[in-house]
Length: 123
Image 1 (tube, one colour):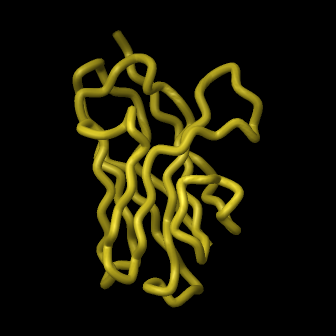
Image 2: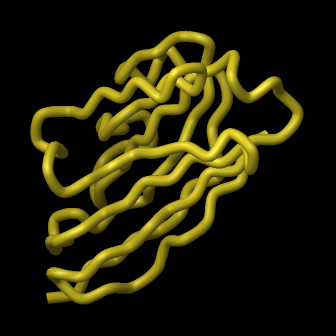
């Protein structure tokens, strides 16, 4: 099970850190992906942000997300974080984390999803 937290309202240029806590699984066997769905998109249209392989903390970032977004993990807390800096109004979206056995930025590779957390960036 995944439980997300950390979303909210922030001014453009600000920062937020999202958390994704994983329960019920052996943490290090999996990968966590972060995705988002921007307003006006269908529920299945989730844009990949980054992913992390929990065994060795290897990360991958979608090109457009490099530099402003950073993913990290704390295996002791079974939690993955998405640090978002220099936020823009176009970053407004519902953000999801997902867990899967494959290390991939493709949403279809993931088995279970968090409930999503709303991030709103005001101008």
